Image 1 (cartoon, rainbow over the protein chains, first blue to last red):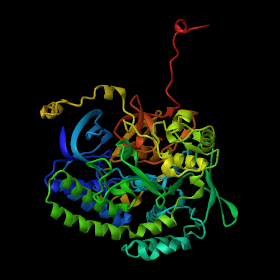
Image 2: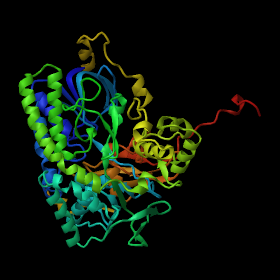
Image 3: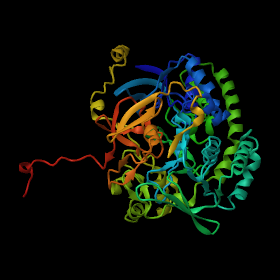
Image 4: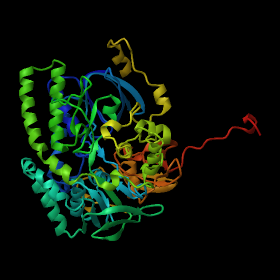
Length: 472
Length: 113
């Protein structure tokens, strides 16, 4: 199996990239793990009932046009397909319907988006504790909402958006416990003039806050020392705010500390990454066509740094233009003109980011978890155990694997990687850039051995016979 | 703990018929279009498994295929991410209790006593 351009991920970036490249005549294959297009942000966009779509608001509904354009573009589409390896020759190994196959691509767009920043807190592994994103997925995809009032804890625009959507759905949160420290707003205010260039965001944010206030959702600001209580499941969130210890009972507690690029694919590909102080995470290095340090590998959407859904679609289109240029499939001058317009729009849309990054920087508590807090959920490694390993000479995340099995469970470091890098950096007094991140290896998710054993890459001579075998 | 949005009823989602499955022998009903994890949550199940290392109670955390906390056994096959599997009629789902069992070798093949 072959294609000109393999796009991985069907969120706004992947849909836009695949659409633009297919319209230009490239043979495009879009691989996505989900059963339908939209990614997390536009989850269930093609099938959502109209009343629910109205409830979720116009920013969500905007995804329908992207999905429709993609469907009409002629791009190949493989839903329910897990890409578990991409090698340096741009061979894409994927699993679909219990069978692994390979697609040989001439260029790749990684559009695997964002994941939520790990939020290590006491009790964060208890059943009933989820990410804020998880609750939003239940709302979008299944129309499921908390029946008895969820407690939302942490910081970031998604926390407020979810609170507002749940309120409109008749499932207002029991409380919002925000970890933004006092004084942060005035410190972030210097980014305000720039943020005003990005149309609509600030007005929407203020409208959300007003709606929550009108609905009477209790709002605790400046919360510290969060802890989730419970034995077999979450029972309450306790925290310190306003100078006193408080406790709110709930069996559902949703945590959020912003989102960060999902690095698995770009790390696997050995793309160069650099630490971003503003976003407090690693970002793949990309040029102004969103091409990574690995030739013909493009990174579009939030995977290249958090920019939101609108920017993701713009970046996707830009990455497609970059691929067209690299593959000699377009006239340079016309591509450059279109790219310039996209970069202008990106610049404007991204102007709100420095304000959001400063205001909603992650809380001190999750960046430096207490010694008895689990940091690696899979292998049950505490922050204290990691600090001890560092004291014994463990120099970085990859050695922490040997010391502690940290990051070696089924999630493959997705949920501890950033926290582990932060803790080691703090303990050693070195920058995160120096400490770096886990090395990521295939398969990107666990696969049954029988499927690996049956994996047939097709012919290795590079002729077209492999395609016929594959279709058989 | 979780409820279906009332506005969805009669909201044109006609395809959302009932789907029957079992979890640890209990009969449950979800809807077409549910992920297995969503269907379990809708049936009041928060704990899906016990962790492999020290058998702590765990349940879904991210619902987007990242955290691997929602692992379940489906029709005899372990380690499915319940959030990534569409619910299907007749699924027999079991919770995973700790790590996989290691079957001890017969006495005669052991060394020493």
